[in-house]
Length: 421
Image (cartoon, rainbow, N blue to C red; front, side, top):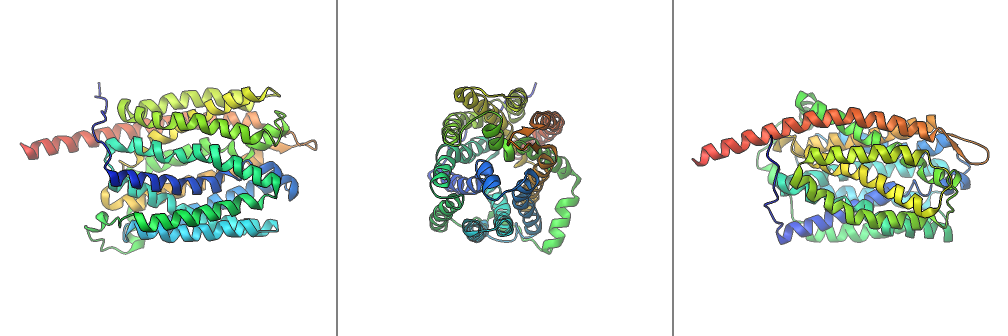
């Protein structure tokens, strides 16, 4: 039996600052991405969009983020990670500002593309910083705290965004994100120290050669596949969740902020616990438990009929907890896969595949879902069954990745003991 990892490393004061900065950056990026789902019903009605058009607005962001991350992979390990983080945060803010001022559907698409181009690299840079500054036994907790951005966006960001959208128009939430992003960017530039440890080993190959070397490494192929499956399985329901709740479950627009707020509060409690559990009992064990919960709740959620709001809140919160119990340990596990000199490139490619897979999921959802004249969505439960099938395949992939990572950690620990002796 494999020994369970134990929590032995506490965070330094500076590490706590880094966690806070990365969590806030993740909050703005996640909010910009997630706000499209709750705004879905408003956008589809105000701009007269069908399901396929709305899915294209969501997937435009995902595809551009994926392409940008892939192109940046060759450069990710050649520069100070702090400089990359701040530079691409500037571009992210500019793209969000374009969304905030878009008056037509083509301009909205353009804004989503620009935002995605920069956000795709932001996520990879943040994960590479985590891998550089935190040990493997700390990363589950770090991911738990940084992934709280999902919870905070639901507690504060999305309810406030929906309130602004209902009071003014759908542009207002994007304007709010721009203001918050500029403030966060200033704090990051001031407090985050240069992250250059990976530059000690000089990278002599050119960026394209570094990208090709990372992509062609067969050891990385299974983690890349698992990342894509994780994103597809976790994201396929999201774009149409709000239109489904409003039109099929009879949730009113005024009740949506309460649902997201309640889900966020429960997530703020659950996510740090998930991070600690993954460090204490193992990443894979936590992942499997989360997969089981997510599969059960997806079946219940996608077959909902009009029910009281409190039931919608409980079901949604449990489903989200299951999804995040998959994402946190698997993301922490992925950080242990690449070699130090490949981390930036690996994380960029991994982030790219995650974004592209999210775009594919949105497109597939747009093909499967059909909206009737009265607004009700058809085939939402079929989408849920597709998600469950993907989750099963993904679990097998993560099982083999976990075995490989544990074997590598075991051998590295054995070598250190022999060197000390």
